[in-house]
Length: 442
Ligand SMILES: Nc1ncnc2c1ncn2[C@@H]1O[C@H](COP(=O)(O)OP(=O)(O)OP(=O)(O)O)[C@@H](O)[C@H]1O
Ligand SMILES: [Mg+2]
Image (tube, rainbow, N blue to C red):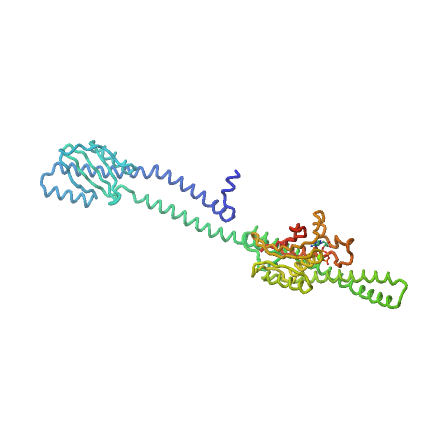
C-alpha cells in the first residue's frame, strides 16, 4: 500500500489526470479486446474465404482453358480485378511442396481457407515489402505461385474503428486536461498566497475564483489575512502608544531628579540610582518605539542582503569592533530592509558586547538562506538558550549591571525573523562562543 502511494504522482493535477485517464484506458482496452476477438477474426476469416474461392476459381479455369491468348487474358483479368497475380507454375518435376505458413492470424486464416478449398499442400508467406501475401499451391500438375494484395484480407472498418477510438480518447482526455487545469489553477494560487503570507509578504493579488469550495477557502484565507494583519497593527499601535505616553512623565522625572541633584540634597546617592533607573526605562521605551516603527508599515522589497550586511558591519566597525563578513554577492532576497537590518544589528551587537571577534557568514541551504553570527565569547549555557529570547531576560545582569541592555534585543530579532517566515536559533560556536543562525525562506 505504501509502495503504491510512492508510485502515485504527488501533484493534484497528475492525480486528477490519472483519475480521468485510467477509466478511459480500461474501457478502451476492454472494447478493443472484445472487438479483436469477435469482429476482426470473423471478418478476416470471411475475407480469406473469398480470396481462397477466387484462387480456386482461377486455377480451375486455367486447367480447362487451352487457348494461350485466353489463358493470358484470364491471368491478366485476375490480376486487375481480383488483385490476385499468378507468378509462375512449376512443372511437377520440381520437388513436392512442403506445407507451411508464417505466424500471424491473417496468414493463418488464409492458409486454412486455401486448404479447405483446394485440399492440397499449401504454403503461405507474408511479403511485407510489397504489401502482399505469397501463396504456393501444390497442384498434382505442378506448384503454382500466386500473390494477393494485403488490402483484400484487411477490413478497412477495423482501421477506422481504431482511429476513431484512439482519436476520441485523446481528444476527450485533452479536453478534460484543459478543464482540470482551469479548476486546479485557483488551488495552486491559494497555496502560493498562503506561502507568501507565511513569509510576511502581504497578499493583495488574490481574488476568490474557481469552484465553490475553492472560492470559500480563498475567501476564508483573505479574511484570516485581514484579521491577522489587523491584530498585528493593533498590537503595534498599542505598544507604540503606551511607550510614547510613558516617555513624557519619564522625561519630567529625569528633569526633576536633575534639579534635585543640583540642589545638593542629602540623598545624592539615591537620586543617582533613580536617575540611572529612569535612563534605563527611557532606553527601553526608545527600543519599543523603534521596534514598533520598524515592523509597522514597512513593505517587503527585493533587497541585496549582502549590501545590507555590509551596512551593519560598517556601522559596527565604526564603533571599533572587528567583524569578518563572508557572503555571496549579490544576494537578492525579498524582505523588510529596515526591520531586517535591526534584527541583524541586534545579533552583531550582542556578539560584540558579550563576545569579541565576530564572524558573519551567509549560506544557501535548500529553499532558505542562513545568516550565521558567531563570536568567541563565553557563550550561553544550553539551559538558557530558549529563555534569552523572552523579553527583559538578561543573563549577565548579576555579573555586570553596567553593561547596558534591556534584554529586548533577541526578542525583537526573533520577532522580525518570524515575521519573515523564518526563525532564529542559538547554538554553540566552535570556540565555545555563541552561534546564532537566522534562517530566511526565499
Ligand atoms: N553573543 C552572546 N554571548 C553571550 N551571551 C549572550 C550573547 N547574546 C546574548 N547573550 C545573553 O542573552 C541576553 C539577552 O540578550 P538580548 O540581546 O535579548 O538583550 P541584551 O543584549 O541584554 O539587551 P539589548 O536589548 O540591549 O539587546 C543578554 O543579556 C546576554 O546575557
Ligand atoms: Mg542585545
